[in-house]
Image (cartoon, rainbow, N blue to C red):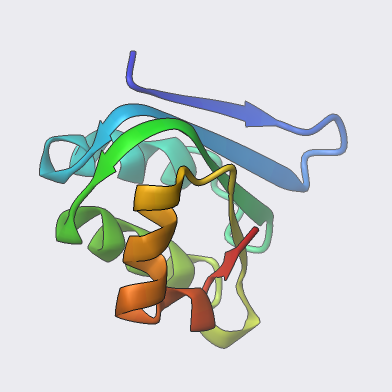
Length: 101
């Protein structure tokens, strides 16, 4: 599976790990990964350690998650970006909206 989800012991942090290509083909799986948790007030961590490609559809998915999680009040953090993926966040200024660590 390309997307896996884990929840912290207290249930307040949902970590979504994307492996391989983060692109349009994952729209449904990515959406299910956080909507099935039914907790829009949670902290969301997107782990991209194993992501080697990301396109504009992935940015759209992250934006949708950000809105689902509360928009400006959202607690969404992207971690473990490879240099090429991090550059996409910087070029598009997504790192101003979603924390990229």
